[in-house]
Image (tube, rainbow, N blue to C red):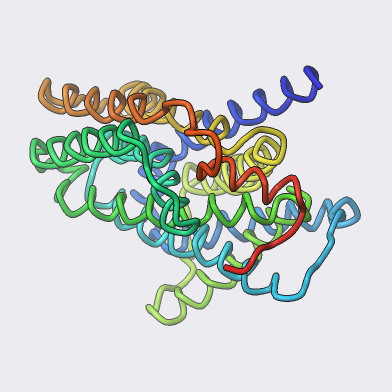
Length: 313
């Protein structure tokens, strides 16, 4: 069991590192290609990777009505998530967008409260309030630059991306007890490729004839490692660790994104924004108190995983 837990932790750390670097990679790719084409490209590459492992995509125990959850999984992430994130990274910096992702663990708990009708403790409510205040301060202190022309709107789009990521995480935890990480990753990749292909057609976006080598390499990196690799690693870890522990790894994204943004894009935030970022992280840590035990939202999610059943939604 310890060895399996170690693998799960390593997989989650790998996913977080890859996702942190994706903010920078997307900013680079968007410089030379249309955002929707970039997302379609990464989904198409991820779908190709999934096809290479089609013999290993097993472990399915389909139950009546799961098509609705599988459809919602793909719609939340990658479809809507990447629409919002693409818009966000066109308007704000990678560092600010990465900082907002720190809200995800708190939002997952709030989402579980809404879905499972649980009562939130004072630590969770206080932490959520502090983290949201930090995000608001981070946004208000943002200054328009060449790479971040409208940080206020961009940060709002990133917040919407976190809303869809919350739905994705809750649905993933529900489905991971019956479907293998490879299968769920394949579902997301195919759904994303079809969705963004249709979006490109609807928006009149054509495939560019001359794509810079940096754009090609970035799209391949995003498809192979960030989309296929990271989603597989995250699904692998989610099924082997409690939801609270798995989502807690998201707290590393803001710090790593700040580092990658500084290292590769030369992004530097103002002192006020660094203080706001510290508020976000403190709020998230404050909310990570021990579950209230009987009937907690996290326990309910873990119960779904262990029982292998889907209760009436």
